[in-house]
Amino acid sequence: MSAELPKKIKLLPGAEPNLAAATYQIYDESHTLGNALRWMIMKNPNVEFCGYSAPHPSENVINVRIQMYDNLSSLDALLKALDDLDDVCKTIDDAYKTSLKLDNYERFHEDS
Image (cartoon, rainbow, N blue to C red; front, side):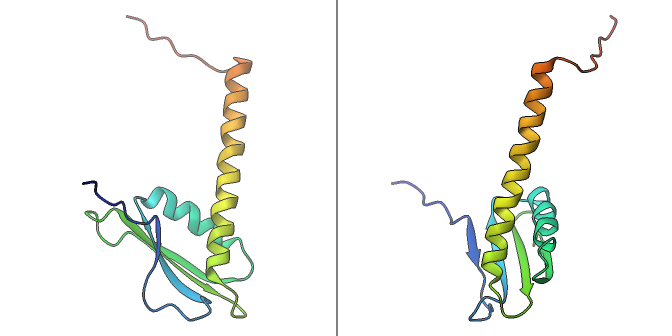
């Protein structure tokens, strides 16, 4: 018998029917993703408000609240922000790997 893993993203109760305002719970994440995701969501000009919280240190989740202008879907904004954040991380990873291959960085050697 295996334990079932929770879904990664869950829509919390109280969302508007068209999802223009909704709170999403993201499992197994912390302030690291929360702050970066909030920043990326707020770059969208259709977003009126976005905030996140970590409800309690013993809970391994973050809650992300998104409110949209013009009754647009907050889910679309969340998914776009996740894709955009993924692209930023890939770009940084590629630049880091390129820098390592060029072998042109400062090294520190501790004297014994």
